[in-house]
Length: 75
Length: 222
Image (cartoon, rainbow over all chains, first blue to last red; front, top):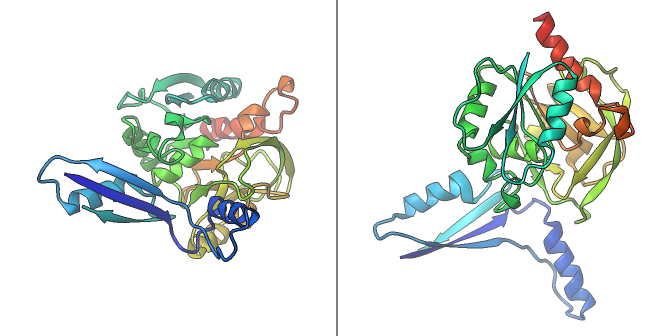
């Protein structure tokens, strides 16, 4: 079984990389991009029986730094 | 006086830190990250700069969960001294030993330059050798030194005089110009600049040496 974890900087935490991408899109003539936030997608290949709670523990302990990041789990 | 310097794959300031510790009088041992214990009788642990584990996932994230991390936390919990420059600071925030986090520099560039720091707080072993308000020249070399924490944490750090150093001109976007912070017992110091690279006349400056002498002095007079 697979799980996908998306890790994003929390709203309110400045994302200078996202800002740089937004500027670059504007420079390429893509108007109307009001904001860009850049995050990470982590794919996990898991043994059968792994629960959502297990993946949540993985996120809390390692995959996300909850001081600055939030995460969502798809499985 | 005994010190240990932790060594992770990708550490690159471990030997610089050991040289600075030894110059201040510490009998210094290097400790590989796969160890689960520190040698007995260690007074000071150095968590060095570099790119531990290639900065994979987040800077310091993997090192903060490596086998030696438990012994590092236990050392901090029993009131031992910990000095953590640059990647070391990132490791300590990831390990929860210091509050906040280090984000990508606001200008998105790796910055390598000599930085003027104002000594904000002299009530700690690390900073007692300086005068409050003194400006010292210490090198920085980082891509993720933009210190951030929630407003409550920043207020607490300021209110408890735990900001040890501030940049005179903030190069990386750090909140309130914070360059280095102390733990609540004032025995753990994390900072982005590298005092160990300004501790010998051959480095071009010696403003960092007083920091290491300060810890040595605190141990001698204890």
